Length: 583
Image 1 (cartoon, one colour):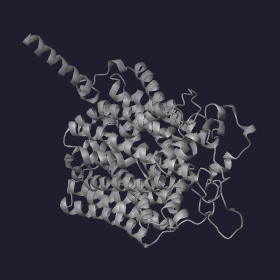
Image 2 (cartoon, helix red, strand yellow):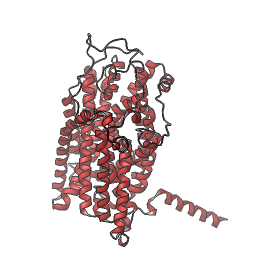
Image 3 (tube, one colour):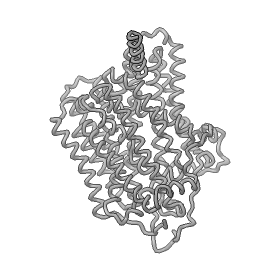
């Protein structure tokens, strides 16, 4: 397909589709505010009264962290680096098994509202407070990226007002979180995951028609080196290989699905442990569908622009704008469909931000207010709503900081690695190691954070050289126009260089020894480093400080009866006993 020098622009039908998505999301919040009669208890507001079933919770789990970053940045990642990103589908399997078999049974049995309540039950209050503060910092930073990313990309391609889009989505999200609580968040997630898939499909179907079929798109991808799934290079310095994605990705996503308040709060809201486990396994299908759509969209992007890269040609100012550019290019003759894709990107934003706001309100109530005050349920419920409003406003404000974080996808995953990794190590220590004590837990957590911050901050100042990240070739030889001073102006004004960009442009000859060894580790290994450091230091310090003398309640650690494997073993044993009696 020849690249057109003129792309489409938003029309009334596109704005109408986008506005309808916001209106339906807000209406769900109003409905649950009325149906819940104000939701007078914090448990009803924050946990949905533990009455949810598996399917809506599963779709909500899928939507929560499949944000606009997935819709915009994952296809751009595939376009630049190849489809190896799709190997995260393998790590999702391990993540769901570990989360449902190790973490869920303990959290559900304890009946906690905040994940960090577990840290006080298992260790002490200081550990709980540190874990809570780390979660709040992590979530606000991540949410800032999630709000700002689509607004910036879509503003510079479609012309939508940047801060108008940021504030409108933030306000709608804060509104339905404050009005309807967890039930509103879950059911808007169900609606929004449908919009995300519909948006992807509209682009994919049009691209397939234009390029002459799926086989042509796959052939183009193979010829361009984009079907690079099976790279078994064991070097931890390589950005994406089979090992970095399956091992590092498993740690990153387990820190999200296993212990992150936003996810745990959802499956604990199910009416039974069986429903909670089912929600995780059904969610796996949702994750695979979204991953398939985003990876194939990236291959479509390459197929359409294989001879004329819009980024190199200067038609977009950042890779994250490539998907919106293609949408406005190939769907310009179909009013409403560009609006559907923009609604898909913002649905991802709304689902993630609403999850984060609800989770932030929950941990603040349970970990920072309840233990130190004696408020009535009514006052706590109103405080929960006030906190939802406050955190929504704070996340909108934090969106401005996201402009300093470079690559959106890598920045988002790095945040979860640097902070989520040590927290995963701490929870694993408590659940899997009966002799881990409070001293060991605190020492391990602090060590893990220091180690993760060291490598994470170092990687920002000394990013890996291209030989480690290995971006694939892009060309402009097929472009039939120039991007210099001509009649058209497609290039958005480049953003001011960030603090990191300025530092990164230094001469490679000045790089210290650690820059090309320690700081050049794949960003996916930030999480395993934090987790394993926390576990190792926590175990050693616990053993040295009398951990073997610890007398724990069995309910705070994983018991063999919790696992599905033990259930299968019991069932098999029972069948064998019945068979021997019959014979």
